[in-house]
Length: 203
Image 1 (cartoon, helix red, strand yellow):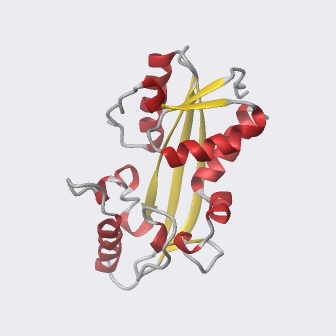
Image 2 (tube, rainbow, N blue to C red; image 1 turned 30 degrees about the vertical axis):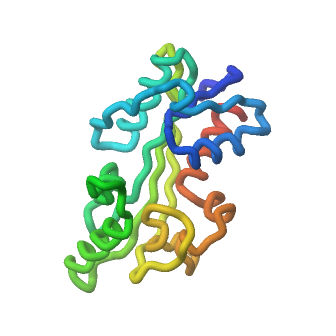
């Protein structure tokens, strides 16, 4: 049985304003006050796990312990079948340059590594998101969302972020970067995980 959220304030353990806004909008009908890590001067804990659920757990529990509030965190990324699931938890690391993140570089690397596997290498991939809601007493709930699709090259579209310009969701012929944000959010890995979270903890 999923533990229900009964408080009035939810801490989202992120410094990403886009994520905060998205979660605020989704929880607006439930009358929840959503605050971010910056509101409590929380540092970003080191992510030392090799799974999405492990890293999400680190962030959620650190924030819940530091503030005494229920804390929601996510860890997300892309898994590429031809690369045995890489980059996975290292999705953002592939874009690190020492001078900010360069996702064009990361996408080119992904395409080059698939191409190096030969013409028969599958181009299927999945965007994955794991959400953890942790309470100060140590209890947590896990919600996972997956958006399957395939990778195209050259990239297409000016919207989205990260690997969106090369990712074509299953059943569609446009990349995530070519879709209106509202349409993408309905089918995205994070959107799917958030739907499970709302149904589980607020339903």
